[in-house]
Image 1: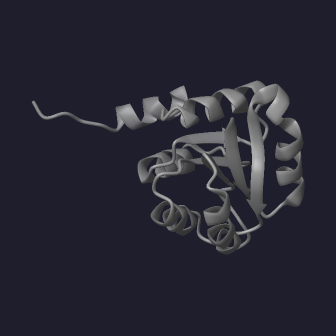
Image 2: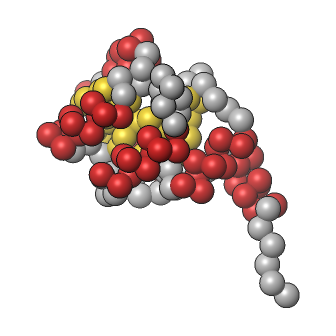
Length: 142
């Protein structure tokens, strides 16, 4: 069973995520949620999910600071971004910070399920276009 904790300021996204996955059919369950990082920091210790799902842009807060606060508080819980923001710039930035996966809110359920399963197994899941961008910016000494 993979236990998810979702953080998003749009309750419909959290509701949809909770309905999309069921413990019986998918072995994935939304076990908690919060509309902001402050509330998440209060609620996560009592739940201890396997994965934190974080919307990139929550109200007027800083996405980098949100990730750092969560990661500092719960370094053993992997964080996956779930966002409408699909720019390469943000995806590369978040992977460099340490997110374990990045999903667009328009992804199919099977894709989301696969990413959650891989991340729960400890794998970093980087989309091909992001890994190519990361590799192309890397130079090796001669």
